[in-house]
Image 1 (cartoon, helix red, strand yellow):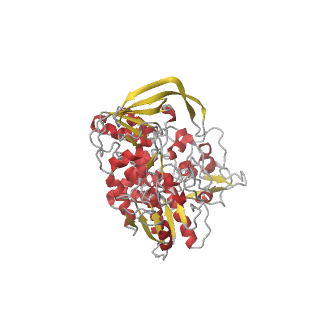
Image 2 (cartoon, rainbow, N blue to C red; image 1 turned 60 degrees about the horizontal axis):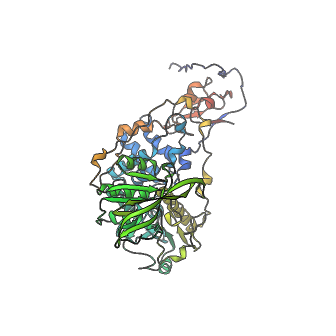
Image 3 (cartoon, rainbow, N blue to C red; image 1 turned 90 degrees about the vertical axis):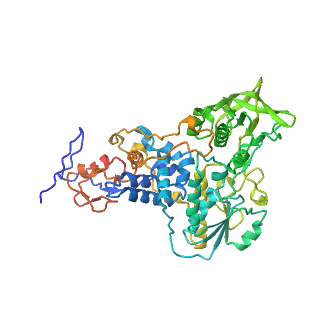
Length: 559
């Protein structure tokens, strides 16, 4: 059999190697790293793992279905609702993506959505970690993202889990706070059913604290998780807002998402700059109203997801910046206009954003047939007042446990945040509950992660510049009059494959063969293991360091 000769074009300054004696006493070692995307994801989804399941499928001899199935189960280790999260998460993972230092970040969120939709289409079931059936019974208050996630991670460990939901259907803010044009209900329903198929019972129209007391629940169940969400909108605290055509953002979206009909008239004013404000404005526009958003800072400080702001602007929603309401003007008992004042920005306040200050004498009036206050929201602690701490909300320790032993909490009942943060709370609480009943020491998972790989530790010049694959959107003129027409589409197989190949596999081998090609003493060998395609024969190594120097993703280090 002919010997394989590896020919390498050497760059100027390249060290020799080649077996002419020991270059150094250092030897190479494969050292996995944590990619920054996974570190920044609140739920620590194995982003690199699920994306490379797709991008490396052909090299590993796997079919399209096999690759996406593998990707789904990698995601499901942490995130049980990928098709949902892939639609509504503000994707902080993408802001940390090392690919930004080459061109643009990988479209992680859209790839997760693609895998999630595939799993629904193929009817992929969730997997249990054990066939063991635990005797402990767990009660979960609230079927929102935190509660559903907690239930899943406990059920897959063999626990008997019951969710108590105050509303007619499960989903929490996913169902009652997010419009269907962003999150189709068939997608949400399919992902909830998959959790129920693990044996999780969901009892709707059952409000803990009213129909059943917390004490009774605690007596019947071995542990409790509180995930009631924040469904109560905050008022503006200005005169006249008691008018029946003035709604909070949470109230308005809940009514619409519950199927209620609201006569908005022809002029809607929405106050606020967060996701609820954007959602409320886009819903009002779809219902035929001329819609304006009033925000006391500028577009730069708006906390809403950038893509949602851009879509709102495309849809013709007016945005009035540096303006704040000071009074609702009425005709009889109905609001007819809102009196506002101009603002100017001063030094940063406690939020880290510029502080808006009223400009004396700059009042103006804007007519309105409906006013929506989407400035913030809070949990409704009715019957669960013991979990509210003055002006603050529920407090938890590093395990997710409240001051009441055996009762855990997570999601918006802790603080207003994203769906992915709620998922992380639910998952970590489930982990802590399991450790407790198994008499094991609980340690935060972040302590178990390997070091983070930064772009400075990679060979960015190896990676070809590739354009980010755009998402196709519904033409603007086709969006109105229907609250359920989804605006953005899922990647096709070809688009997802192309986007997945933009992942640089930071800190983990992706079979580029650079270490094998550059080793002149045959100390790097190929293996039959497609998941670990290379190995070192250290007895042949002369310590030239070329494998580590040429490894694009920073997987090889010298020791």
